[in-house]
Length: 168
Image (cartoon, rainbow, N blue to C red; front, side, top):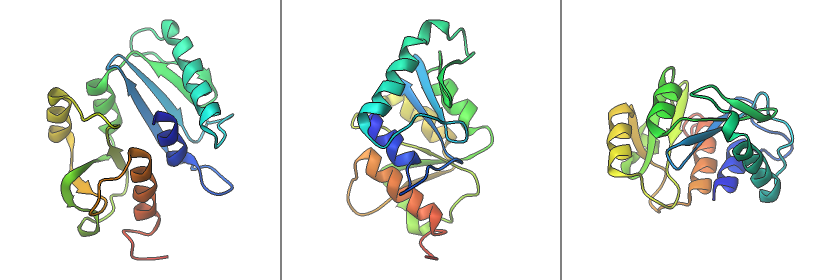
């Protein structure tokens, strides 16, 4: 699931989105960060993405405190859980929680600098949900049906690419 999410966040047909950053919070202890403007060696297959995540995890002992350890260009790991990652990422962004009970995304103006936050097939813990509710500027759903996390990322990109579905 994580590999598909990373790929959905970055890949276009013949390019990658350099203005995208992905944070994967693992076990509320580590955060693997992918920085689109610096990213190298990311290929559209899940196997190569999994290898980049594995390489980052192999560097976890080198991540001291919140100081990152870079495992390959554009990929690093930090000792940061959900709360600290959310606080840091949200510092200069509009936090948009993707949630099945949110407002329809078509009723929300696309933010200038969005930070979309979503969980995988496991819901956020109660504590994480409370932190996110406090940090979220918007809580939206992307359609009438519940989507997989990686599909949600693609739909969210389309929403942003089309200025809220208003231009193609």
